[in-house]
Length: 234
Image 1 (cartoon, one colour):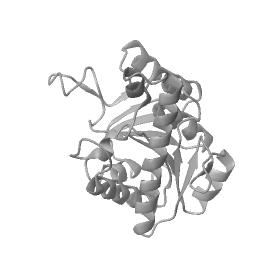
Image 2 (cartoon, rainbow, N blue to C red):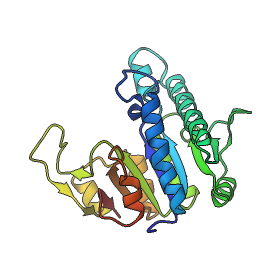
Image 3 (cartoon, helix red, strand yellow):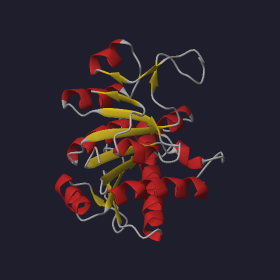
Image 4 (cartoon, helix red, strand yellow):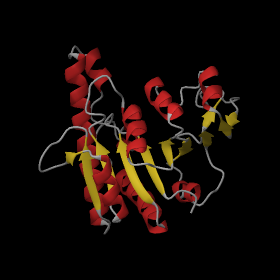
């Protein structure tokens, strides 16, 4: 096992599966099975999942919502996704707990780094919802913050592409994939690994970021076993 404790960042949009909105049950089950494979390996798992399948703050601003209200609505969407993930994990026999940047009793407790670490050490999957608890921050920024708070060995960003490329591979078929990058190289090449706040937080605190295709079955387990997948930034 290459990493003892991880923070896995998942996008909310990916939970839609083939739907145009909401949570696709097959996709939810797929993610849970991948997470369980990591837990069974002995890895301590923290998760941050977005809310874009339900609502994103920037979408709200485009429709006339106040940006702050829109961001809080987006945070609530991440809590809904996190509760769905917790419920599905428990249905498969795994212990899970939801923390949040916004406390909503009895649904989720306020995020506290030591408490989250304690539960992870007891075998729980710690799902951390509600963004940072503040508007104007993305779930990428929340993932970077939570990775540092739980003292993760690495931040794993699960995407639909298999790493970081010289250009968007979905738009540019001739784009070349990087196996590894330094923080400075990623910044200078303007590769948009994560938003600038999240990226800077990782860089300043030496938190490595691995971008990989989480939708390829077995990839999460392969990463944890040390296979050379995706692109690592450190």
